[in-house]
Structure formats: structure tokens, C-alpha cells
Amino acid sequence: MEKRIKISEETKVIEKFAYKYFCDCCGGQIKEVPYEISSVQISFEEGSSYPSGTDTETEQVDCCVKCFKEKVKPALENLGFKFRRTVTNY
Ligand SMILES: [Zn+2]
Image 1 (tube, helix red, strand yellow):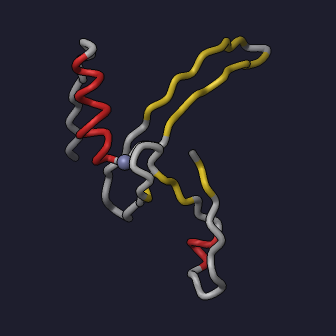
Image 2: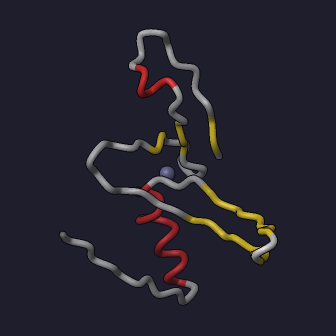
Image 3: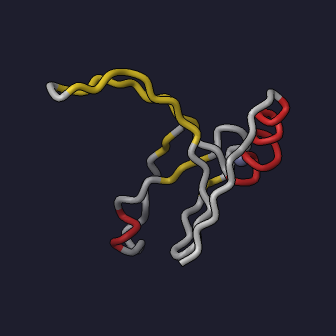
């Protein structure tokens, strides 16, 4: 779920238009820390795409890393899903 937070005037300009996300499960704020990559994307997209146009619907949830590691991932693995691991290092 996406929630827009009213930010005080003293807040830096860069934060003025920032969206704050909260985990649908625990309600904790999902923070984005500069230079750190730690995020969860859970979404489903369905529809069609032709040269003449695209028509899709997307469903997604907001989930913090802690809830993903402790609840979502174990639940999906319990259903038989196997996570592919990709390592990026350059
Ligand atoms: Zn959470």
C-alpha cells in the first residue's frame, strides 16, 4: 500500500516529493538508503502488448525485507517455489 506523507517545510527538497512506503504485513516503514540495495518487489502483471498498444494490469504488495525473509520466502518455499540466486559484483 502506498501512503503519501506530508513533510514539513524544513525537510530537504529532495525529500519533498518522496513517497513513503509501509509494509503491508508489519506496518513498518520501508526505507530506501542511498548506496544500499535492499528491496523487495512482489508483483504480478497480466495483459497484452502489441505494436498498436499495451493493456496490462499489475498487482503488487509493499513488503519489508524482514517480512520477506521471515514470512514470505519461507511460505513460498513451503509451497515448492525455488528462488534463483543472482550475484552481481562489478
Ligand atoms: Zn514488514
